[in-house]
Length: 153
Image (cartoon, rainbow, N blue to C red; front, top):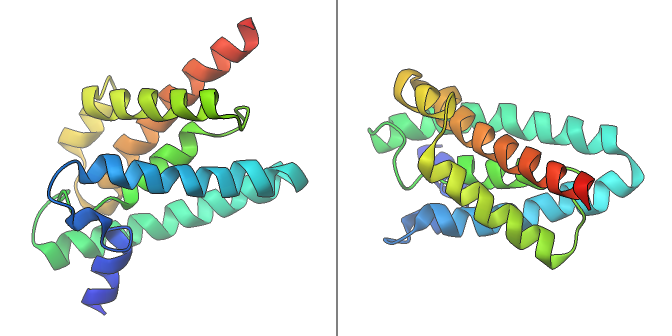
C-alpha cells in the first residue's frame, strides 16, 4: 500500500525527478485542469467543482500517508499538491494557450513566494491538509489574478 501511496503522491513518479519536481507536477496539473475545467465544466460546472473537491479531499489523505511513507514533511517527491493547485488556477479561465501559460506562470510564482496566508499554512500546518492547502491558496491567487485580467479585457 505504501508504494501505491508514493506513486499517487508523486504524480506517477514525476516527484522523483531530481530538479524542479514541483514544476513538472504543475505540468501534470495543466492536464487535470484542462480535463476538469475545459471538458467537464463545459457540460456542468457543478460536476467539475464536485469532482475537484473529491480529488482534493482524497489528495489530503494521500499526502498525509505519503509524508509517513517518505518520513519527511512536505517531501519534494510529493507533487500531488502542485497538480491540484495548478488545476485550481485554471478554474473558469479561457482554455486557450496564453491563458493556460499565464495560469502556469502565476501559479508557480505564488507557490514559490507563498504570500499570506499560504506561507502561514506552509509553516504552521502539519499533515496532508497542510501540504495541500498552501498550493490550493497559490492556485486561488493565480486564478483571481487571471479573473481580474479577464474582466478588464
